[in-house]
Amino acid sequence: MDRLAHWGRWVAAVVAIVGAGRVQAELPLAELGVGMYRIEAEVAHTFQTRQIGLMNRRTMPLQRGMVFVFPEGATHCMWMKNTFLPLSVAFIDERGRVINVEDMQPQTEDNHCARAPARYALEMNIGWFRERGIKAGDTIRGIDRLPAAR
Image (cartoon, rainbow, N blue to C red; front, top):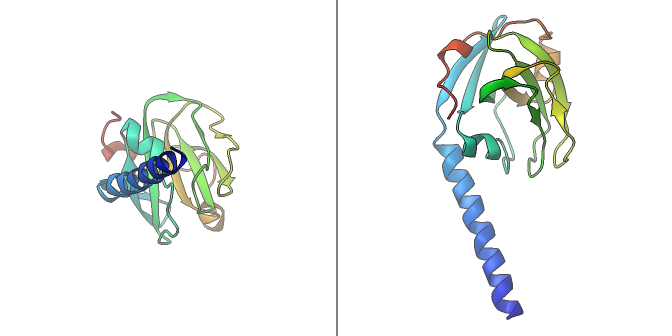
């Protein structure tokens, strides 16, 4: 029975990884901008894609990120369980204004939260916002063209 249980856990893990890859591969892309910088963002606007986020990714191109679209403005929090990339997250309000930016270390369960009600969160490679001087109060362009949260 132990062998069967082990086999079942292995199959479940493979299915989860393949399923996560399929969800990630099907994400729509959105062009966002801030200052003179262009961002190609994968859009996580469903419950499932928001839960998976950038988990299990090993690399991400420099100008690529992931934008999370939440159904309502709230003090949403992000964590890095099963995420291998160090990331920075900008929490953004309904008008596209950056509320705060947090750096997040891989494979941790620390909560990184918006300091005010956020409608969006934009994850980029760690340091991306700091290296470009992007901070609270700056506006992210293109937020108004994102699909509605589901």
